[in-house]
Image (tube, rainbow, N blue to C red; front, side):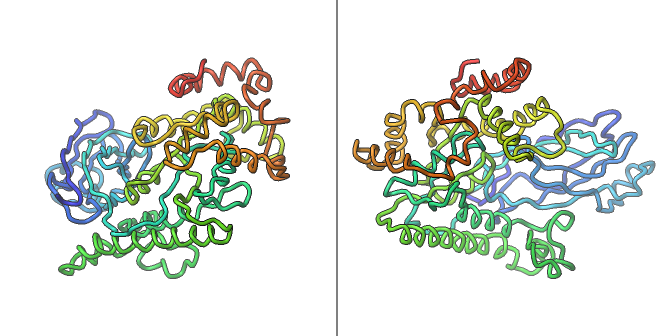
Amino acid sequence: MALVEIDDIELGAPQPGKIRAFALDAPRIGGRDVYDVEIAGWALGDGQRVTDVEIHQAGGVLRRTPLDQQRRDVLRDHPDAPESGIVGFRTWLSVVGLEPEVDLQLRAVLTDGTRARLGKISLRHQPVRSGFEPKLQPLMLTTMGRAGTTWTMRLLSEHPEIVVHRWHPYELRTARYWWHMLKTLSEPRDPHHSAQADHFQTNKHWIGYNPFYPEPIAVTPGLGEWMGRDYVEDLARFCQRSAEEAYLRIAAGQNQTGVKYMAEKHRADNLPWLVWELYPKAKELFLVRDFRDVYSSMLAFNQKFGRRAFGPSHIETDEEFASFLRNSTIRNLSRSWPKRQDRAHLIRYEDLITKPEETLRAILAYLELDASDATVAGMLERASAENPEMKRHLTSTDVSTSLGRWKSSLTPELQTVANNAFGDVLQQFGYQV
């Protein structure tokens, strides 16, 4: 089987007032033996110009490319086109870290900023064949801020077979750094938003995508295949080895022997798909908390430290922040869990606080680790030891009062806002609205 299989290409219809005509020249249905896909075509606006084409998946833009290719054939067939023939686009997209089966949506960006759908590319891809044999498996804690992540990582760090860098607030993500490196350095050129062939060497703070692949590298026979396949696999092997070596040394420095997992916090973005691709035996814990409490805690954290630590600076009201939270991090969790629930494990923060022994045993059973009474009791006892940094992290007087805090800390108006914004996702994860 080829590394990438294009299964279907669906083109939308022209849209009066937006899209007059368009075509997709690449990809074609069939297989490719490199870890990327070419996407090329042209588009004519109706009444206004098409400036860019976006490739997006599950609501996130993977790449945006301008219309900068001259297409005399289009100008010949549409002589009254106002764009002087510069209506073509061409770009490439790496499949590394994408879901195994994915639909890529194409949409045109018009001069007035509106979008118009162009079509869909359905593809399947093989995992990167790095050949690396890991000694440690990744343990991903997929979650969001103020959901009990610090306490959960503290507990995990106290199991002898799980290595977590024990530095509050347990945010070290060195493995994620190496995996991010793989994703970035395996990505084909994007001279409009990443490294440029003429200028990359002048910026010592940024590497970016490879500005020479596929063009002009691919014009040399055999070089394109090496760059698009063998190089990617070699890079993956290096990044995996580096991530593991870092955690083996962390374990040694913390006097841990016989460790099986390296644990880090993760966001519900595309990177966990890359981890599953590289490590079929990886584990993933989805940690959720009543999103009304998360919202309340974020507002309290911002107020406590006098700055907007959560949410972009342009948000002016708490109502706007609730909408932002729903449409960003919470939406990503909501979409990710159903896709990976067959191999992941769900933790509710409330259960971890009110039923810690039972919840920990379920976690350890999922991880296939020692879950004896002595081990669970030891984890809870050591994690509960006095820690000044934990106190600074809290925004309520103690952990128990943080449960259901939204009922007392949010005004009635904001309670209504939170219920309306988060209601469907609360029900999805088993919370009452």
